[in-house]
Image 1 (cartoon, helix red, strand yellow):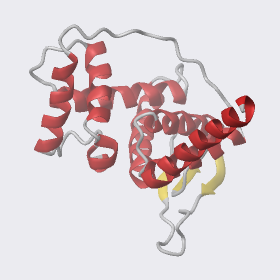
Image 2 (tube, rainbow, N blue to C red):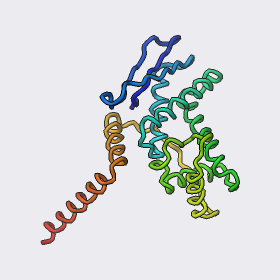
Image 3 (spheres, rainbow, N blue to C red):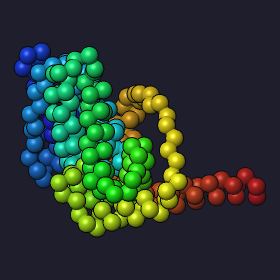
Length: 219
């Protein structure tokens, strides 16, 4: 799914452009961000965008504007890297740059905790979630130049609580393309993430439905 606020320009390979306005058009004007990679095709960079959107959504960043900012910064870095090495796909370069940005950010937060690379990435993800980072500090995610002290302490405390013996398992990722289903699911999860009362109401409704079913089944 392509998020709002982007204009892709391909001056050498493709003259077409994609202009995607923000959903809240009534409350704010469309924001167009120019992205003009010198190598790769429009389809390849759209695929890279989609994979980055999935990557950053895994950190429960419900703020779409911040997520788009991060994606565009990552794509710019990936475009520069792809220009030097076209053997790798834009998607591969994009994920590589995203993980490098994450490593730099987490390295600044856990600089003196002697974590290896796997522990740094897994512990950082754990610390960000347990500290409430997606809701409390979404605008500081991957911003190593601006690290709120309370965010640093909260994330470090979460990793300390997990203990030094934290083990990290590895799985080989595989692409899953659910088409329209993934778009509907994204909108649903974003809505539930922003509205906890709605989330709990749905949960209560589900529990109520199960209890009603069991009552009717065994009465």
